[in-house]
Image (cartoon, rainbow, N blue to C red):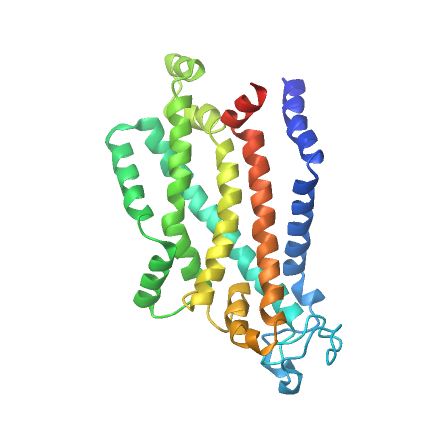
Length: 299
């Protein structure tokens, strides 16, 4: 058994090592995540410490341009904040939103989707119709509604807005898997020997249904980061005092036509690198774990 398990684990790993684009995407994400985690140690400046800001340093170009100087490697914004430092701190917010959304929406969606698929009947109908109703509203509209109700903007409200409609895809995916898995012979045998539902779900149904959620999670991670940036760009996301890649782009767009391109290009590039890397990893996970794709490749 352990030998078969080792073979199962080693095959995806071998495929991973033979995918240079996926390895490059992983390295990019690791570098950005490390920069975000260790931002206080790496950043030349705390961009949200007012006492460290100097207006005379405002709108300095990157260090390789005339007028640029160290320690402002990627230039400064209109308030004299170091763009490189702000990107490091802003990436923290983006990654925190992405991880929180995947954990909360993914966990909740997987749980109720598992119940709906396993028990079926009225419970399945209620959950799926609720999912259809929630999914009909966009995250932007939900964020605006929450903003109007609570009369404030915060990272927690952005996470809540994305999670409210984000759980539906997880629930639908795992429900479809469970509907197929629960009719397998080993599930019927477990019921025949008297195993209770909780044991069957945890030991048999969940492990054989969860692999497609890895693909959904990777895609949703990138979508959540992009949505946070979009909401912040529209002014209904994180507050102005909170570092965010979307907020940086929103504030820098007014200076783009004045030639201060670095205020938009660098945070936009980091945002694009995060989402593009996550999409590459999601595509690899889909090819590796989706049985329909594997059957097509083997045929």
